[in-house]
Amino acid sequence: MKFKSSKTKRKGHSEDFFGTYRDYWWNKGFLDLLAKRLELSRHHSLLDVGCGQCHWSRLLVNYMGTPAQVSGVDNDRKWAREEAAIKAYFEQKGVEFDLQKGDAHQLPYEDDSFDLVTCQTLLIHVEDPELVIEEMLRVLKPGGTILCVEPNNLVQSLTKSSISVDDPIDEILDHVKYALLFEKGKKKLGQGDNSVGDLVPGMLAEAGVENIDVRLSDKAIAMYPPYDTDEQIATMEQWRKGSSWSTEEFNDYDYFKAMGPEAFEFYEEYQRRYSNKGERIMRYINAHKYHAAGGALMYVVSGTKPD
Ligand SMILES: C[S@@+](CC[C@H](N)C(=O)[O-])C[C@H]1O[C@@H](n2cnc3c(N)ncnc32)[C@H](O)[C@@H]1O
Image (cartoon, rainbow, N blue to C red; front, side):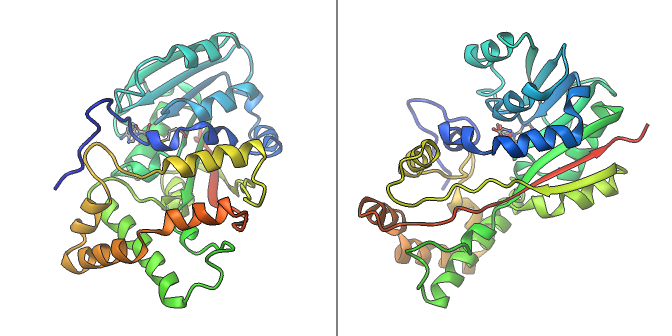
């Protein structure tokens, strides 16, 4: 069985994750520091690979030198269509902007074209992250900056909340096992490793990148009653809508199927046993009894292309 896309409106890749809450992914102080460390004001041209709706380049452009030029590339036709609002955002800043449809494994740009080549949560979705990094470096000017922002998404299955704090060990292990099998199945189907962030510094080193610098974003969206800050409201909205890593082609079902009959049996049992997990969280939130620190592991890895 294959995941059927909505008949009414086609969903773009990662669309469930593009809500307002994505605007709260970064602390401004951290971005200010990052811009200083990377001397972003000396960069005038930027390529955002796997740009989606350009949430990442819309933030970075505020730190670039003038004149600035931003290019975005994405292989999903929905995100590779120029949206008036995104174009207007860059235009009102006096920034030249263009968008292309293209595969990150074979970028549609000349060698040595950009001062800064960056991606945010792209490498976790590609079949061959090493090749994508090679391509990012090919289109980067010598002396230019490569900047990859990629997570480990597994850790979230071990973080605690006021609800899960007393869960039996077997239940916690079930959640970890689900996350691991899901990740392995996704990778096996060529849909990327959801925790590839752990490996990105080594991949950059292997590709010959110099001055490698590895940091962690200091963002955490803590949830606690009465959940009334802007970022908590946006996060809650995201949770209510639900989100999944499904694409037009694949969803959880396919990832577990790919891992063999035993994994698939576990998947069915897991669905039966924990089908009310989301509802339970909402019930506790409504009763103002849910709280969690909201930590995540988002690596910020940068380096320089040798001259
Ligand atoms: C999780 S989204 C991140 C979007 C954006 N970077 C952001 O942070 O908001 C992943 C994006 O990568 C794109 N993508 C996935 N595989 C790709 C590939 N092989 N080449 C180009 N884009 C790709 C998807 O279409 C999607 O827009």
